[in-house]
Image (cartoon, rainbow, N blue to C red; front, top):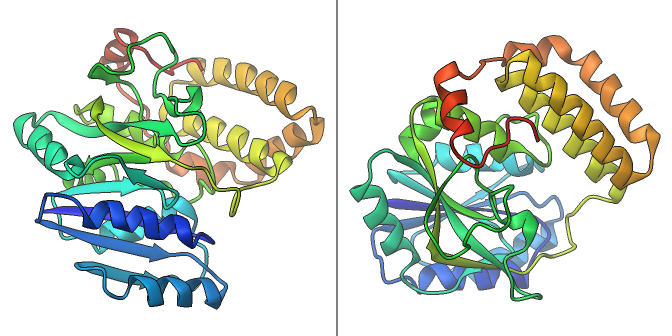
Length: 295
């Protein structure tokens, strides 16, 4: 069975289009787990009224916005499938064979832990740089390629692999959570495969997104947490320098760095409790493919 997990927050029309693309799939052995992170009741009422006839739907109302990481963990907790497919509430599958292709690939290649789907931006009609899971943007976007990480917009993970790495870190409020779990999945000996046979269209909604300063603070803080949690200190040091300079350039706000460093110092003991450094074997493997050890 496949469990399709969606976290929704402040999006009405978008979530209905997403659900429609799942219900139309030609694969019948699936369930939909919808995590409602909305605090405003009118959003929840709208979803319930319009999705009440959706088959195989498990609707779970959160009493608070548990963010993407908490929502995904909650979804897996309620999942019955061996494969968990995640898709953003402002995305939808292009074709009705997405789940069939996913099931066939996962059953055929047992060493694949994650499938990273091809994500096309609805407005530009292109695969955007930030939604392509490779540093080298010249890699063929239509060819299956082993990757070192995946992106959250649309992907599939084996449920047992998700359990082995203990799910997403719930203190990652926004950004870099997929990179963190990617390091841990690779360290367990599983592959991450870019799988362009399945296409998801992403129509980014401005609703529920962070303003510029908060966005870059979260990105920097979480990227440094990824290094602390997973990488040898020499790699963390390089990450620290590169990402601090990048975020300063992009945000044009020194307070973003000061607030980030202060937060990391305050929470350093708790962050280091989750430190599980990837093995030398994993590092050697990463160096053979397009990787994010340094950036």
